[in-house]
Image (cartoon, rainbow, N blue to C red):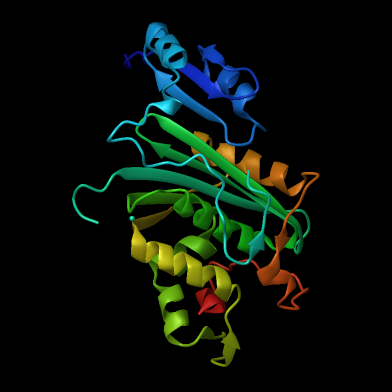
Length: 264
């Protein structure tokens, strides 16, 4: 017989209706669609209630100042706002991007996990691409960290994961943001502005990228899959200057698993 799962209590500090909830589904309803939602998980109701009553968001503990609540500023984007050793704090980031048509209105969703802390980030833009939002979600998550951390980023984009884990982006930068296509011809790399920011952040943090299948039941990934399209369909959309100023308007091709040179 399998082990009985432990009871959990979700203390929502920032959400539609702050309070203690006994199930993830009830907690999800309170944080879904709420910008900068904040909640923590406890094994007893009393601990959850004590957390809310003491309101620790104003009590900074020495080992927990990793995540910030302020809005992030991303170079090249106009968005209304919604630093390496064994002592590095371990953070998990889930990120996803979405686009209504491609190109078209797009958005990203991010969930940051440190110990029992959770932060969510999202933003939408009036004209962009799905791949740009996938990259930007990872950038936004890393920018939200106040100090260098040991970070694992989960993404369902093989384009993003392979570009970093297989060192494609490093090669592109070394080659002046040029790559060879399937015919061996030199082509401009797509999204060089974002890849440059991503590589700078990977130099600051110790980052490992892991691919996760989308819509596979993973709580963190599925939450981001909700945040990203919601941001893309929002009423107030920012401007992706890097895309709009590039003059590019044709849809970007998605990564082809059997043709990795598409991104070299």
